[in-house]
Amino acid sequence: MGAEQQYVVFRLMGQPYGAAIDVVREVNHLTQITRLPNTPAYVEGVIDLRGEVLPVVDLRKRLGLPAKEADGETRLMVLSLGEQSAALIVDGVEQVLTINTDEIVPPNQHVTLPGQDYVVGVARGHESLVVVLDLARLMRE
Image (tube, rainbow, N blue to C red; front, side, top):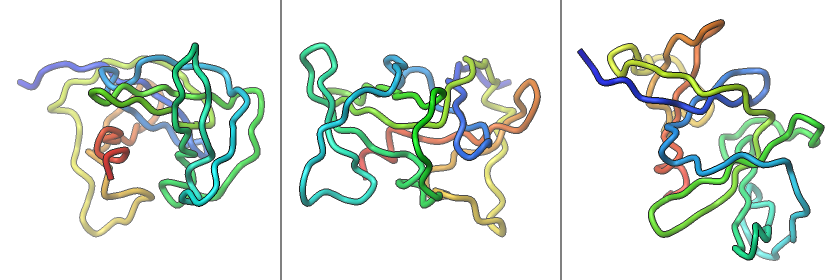
């Protein structure tokens, strides 16, 4: 039997996604972003989070999904990736969910998902299927 692990469940385009809680340091409301020149289209800029300057990545754009204007549900998920940190813009954050790793089904090779290279698999949430992403790998690449 697999181990249980906690995942932060967040939304993009109404679809629940999950990220291992050990890489998610905190969740914040969207704040003022300072734009940077000559960065990839998915890099929105940087923020100052309590004296720490963090790059901000729009996860929709990074996964090839259509852009969306920020609203009251938009959140920044701050990630800790070893000695580096970054913030991801997501449509909203819902809950922390405990999933048994045996219950994560690898993606079907014949089905294409946005950001498929970073999809660990799909798991049953309380109300719907949750696409589990490897955010550490996504941010490294």
